[in-house]
Length: 184
Image 1: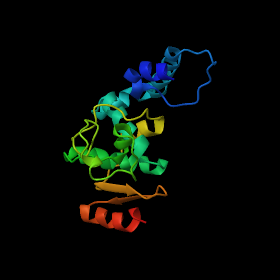
Image 2: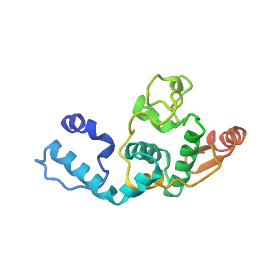
Image 3: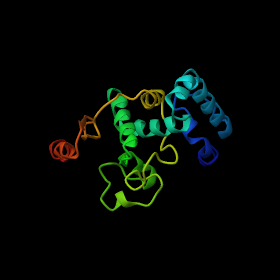
């Protein structure tokens, strides 16, 4: 409902996606409280690991939100996390297509070159670093992938329309993957 969207906006990244059973008469505030409580319960055991990672909870959750939308398959999440953290370490733009539904409502296959230049702090093609906030509420597997990235030399990846992900170490390899897998 509009009330839920309005009241939940400030807690957006900390509303844990799960299956909940609520009575029809439930208030939006009570749903938000339960989702926040579930987030805290599901991530409490990770607090020390997050502290020792050198990253803040916000950074982990924002990265996890990107991974949630970028990685269709569970097996790709830690590796995509590794690619994205690696890019940040090298001060490269993240260039994550999953931000565009959040920014302009278009999915990866609808985005054009003009869209890539959209002036939004969430546009990882224009602005460096992590976006200022989450683009979705990530689940536990995306949070774990953000916290435990697979170390990699890959700097690029793309997914075909069937959700298969292809990785590359160089831009030339990435362009070859695009020609081979993306435009089919």
